Image 1 (cartoon, rainbow, N blue to C red):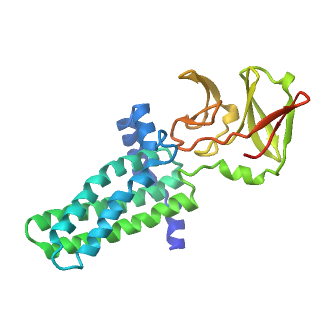
Image 2: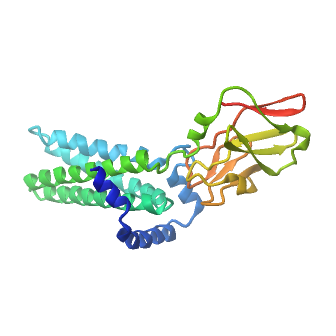
Image 3: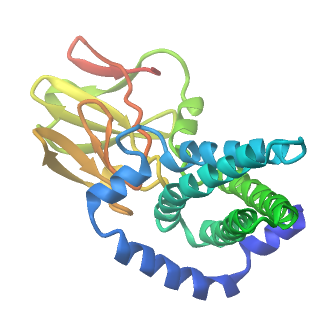
Length: 283
């Protein structure tokens, strides 16, 4: 399996299909609010992994009921619930996939293909059951479960091995030592300008607004973009930093994600001023 995954990651032949699909997804999901909703910005957590729980749970439960006598109607109902609830999960997944790197999109494309096959099998199972062909309906359901299980394995690799839609910045905290770290004199910090400093070789950004100073991890949680090179914009009365790579946007006074593709908030460090010098420490 490891060898197969490496081959998929390096399969440049998938890029032609992937690039066309990416353009189609981005052309369809044009509105920022729609994309943010599907990314899970409002949730503070990627939405797609949460949404797949309902169809997967329904389909697995149906697989158990198909082994029991007298459960045809219940199994068919669960398959219908799973099939219908999979559609919004697909939309959220495609929205996330379109914002990934090329190597991640290759695995994601096969992940989506396996799940599409599974979804088609479950739709065929419903049709067969409605026509009284329950044996065929069960067979298609088990084929569908096999396909989506393979897709789930690839989804796990995409998240846990390739880091798709997980916070890329949180590991920076583990490189910082305990205690308070000096970051410079308060008097030297300009108002409402981004500055980049380092704590134990970990880049952070400083932003002063009045007497309040934000110290935020500099690497974007989406794809490690340099927030220190981003622009500051005022959104809904809050100063926000916009990642120059993919446009993920975070409030500077709280770290909350405002716009995706990032779905995770950015980490802020607690600060204090001692004898006119700004200091920060681990949360």
